[in-house]
Image (tube, rainbow, N blue to C red; front, side, top):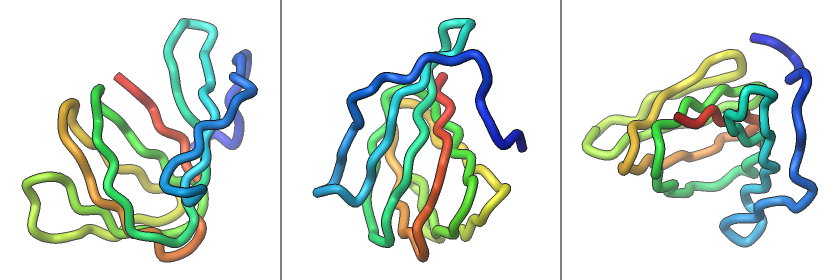
Length: 104
């Protein structure tokens, strides 16, 4: 896992969700793809997906339950999970979670 994203543009305005429990910035790659880089504070939240998402965990730990699954899986720093388009996932952050979300 790379420690940085090169040759990008970052939107200045932060996306703040769930009363500040999740804060992210949109990153536009040179090839036009979009990612977000953010932090989720310890909490239990549900995210809806429009496009497929790969959540790359930079630091922290969480439990994730994808829509339609009965059991949560635990993920930590250096791991990732995928969520399909037009779906949702519940995430319980066990400690502050730093992430990069890859869309599409």
